[in-house]
Image (tube, rainbow, N blue to C red; front, side):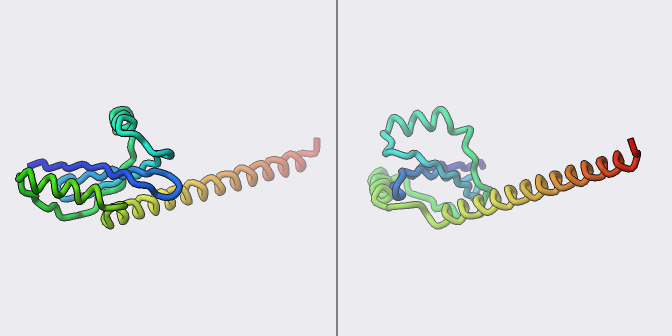
Length: 138
């Protein structure tokens, strides 16, 4: 059975408003963080979701437990009120974001290292070519 839950939490993280998209897909949590800047209105958030949802870069999945909630409407209302009163994002989400940042950092370091090595190699070959031209004696 395919069980997917998505949620968006918007909160104020000095000095910007931040949105955290969470997807729980078959017990695996993926997270994406978006910075809105000024306080977004409801229609602006909805427009962002409609236009940019598929462009979001989610972190790799982390295993998590899914809590089953009752279909009692009063309980759902209480849970929604509780989630609205909570500030910030869950710890699992923070872990996923941290892991994503570390992976991006590793990729960036690897790319810059490769670029430096390629530049070194290019300069070395240029130096060798100049040396050969000097030996020709023209």
